[in-house]
Length: 473
Image 1 (cartoon, rainbow, N blue to C red):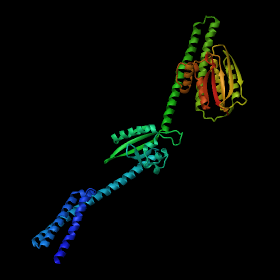
Image 2: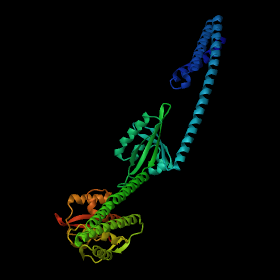
Image 3: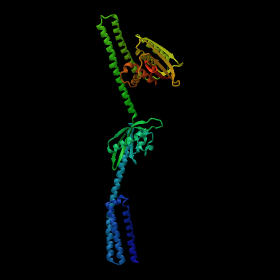
């Protein structure tokens, strides 16, 4: 009975040690702590204790006291070794736990710093996204700030987990992947490009943005931050700068070229008159008349430049204006201002109501169209026909000013209209001058449309028709 109890007392701990040894062996692949050197020592000590217990059991069952004592000695040594290795394993665990807590603290600090940066960028209006590479080339949004959510038309919570490229127009998604690849290959270097966000509603316009990607190595992974900037203000500023530069070039060209030509012409005629003092009176008068015509043209150009500047700066609201009243004033001005030509203007109104949406510049618009017709008519007697008709289901009025000048070829017509749109200088500039540009400027202000037709269809040499369409007031 005593031997049985002794065997049971030894066998039960031995069975526990066997189970523990099997657990340590099977759990090594899953638990990093069990793959350390300290864990290997603990496992060896458990196996030593298990071996000593089996040796003691053998000694008890055979009645050999020496074998039993040896077994207990091995159990004691294994237990001591296990205790020491266990203490080392506990210290290793404490170190790992402290490192883990420090990592958690650093991660929390990093998240807090990132959150602070994200909120700070809101003051500048810059959108900020933090993304992570999902399966494949797409980036999934982890977090974002307010401006980024506003540009992407979604709340910050709704954006989390969504792919960044799904917000772009389909044809630009491949370009985003190329930039993402470059950013990953150049950690710490911002890589940016222009993109267009997909329209928010069917048939809507996309929003131009600039995306900047910066990748940063974070251990085995790569952290990526994306800035999102609305490019519309920048594009507007660039367009305004180009417009201002174009205006400056246009005015400079007028002053340095056109005014210089007129002044040189007047000076030339006056010098001829000075050199021909003894010439017949009619010849001297021709020189004087030619010089006077050049001076008047120069003065008219200066007035037109001043008028153009005032019109372009005007912010007065549009209202209903009687177009026939403005037409009559413009006709009177044209007939009486051209003293060297006999001007006849026939007005053929074909509608009962002639109110259009315009302002005080309407009379100048008609005057410059009529002046253009007179200027480029070679004959001393100039006949101009002006007609008014309805257009676009009665919502607009179309004014046609027809002359019998040399006409405008289709090629010249395209150049003139292109120049009016872009203010480019070319050989057609010296036919159209600044008057037609004033016409185009005022017409654009009214939301109108300007085009040129043949007076006789298919025969451009028999005169031109300048057509102007304005909305009814």
